[in-house]
Length: 290
Image (cartoon, one colour):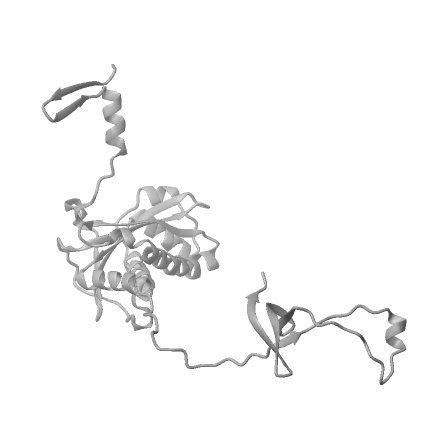
């Protein structure tokens, strides 16, 4: 069906085929309302800093010791959803509060790597009740990840996190979600941070710091760099035997050129004109040498 255009006054209505409508709908980007009004779209460099710190944590704790290949990817920030109510573990420090949630399959894979035990596919896909070892390891892993995240945000000012009473993140928090994968074992899972207002402030403060530029110094330069200029007035080609026969008192007939070469450290920078005044030679009319 070809598109048909109907005109009624100043309103144009285009009737599109179903296939055309589906193509147009698929090309539209859906905006998360939580990102409106703040420069979330400029956070790519900040998220890359977070990725580098967390990747380094995985490398030091697992990849380097156990031969795994855990890396992070697909970082995103979104509003919390109603179905995101369970599975959170909350930690706090003087800089704010963060709740952490990790896919259990990924956590069990990290636990197996930590204790250097085989990865049991049956256990990963159908795990039993949570054990005490799993809870203790989860707390250790959460605080290690939070330390890496905080270091990326506020550097050496980051303080250790400690667990606090579990609570569901409030409606104003934003979820920082990342995918952790190990292609050697065909594993992947999500880790999520629920950031409160204080940590969102740290996030955008980091963005401001990355985009700050030093103000130009309007004061005149006070430092002087001494430079020695050498002027080469002329050159003369001579045969070697004539040069070797020269002795004191010999006279070489020369003619001064119209221009001279001006050098700094044997590098020719300018070509200058020669002028004579009161028996002295002057150089003037400097032209840069291309």
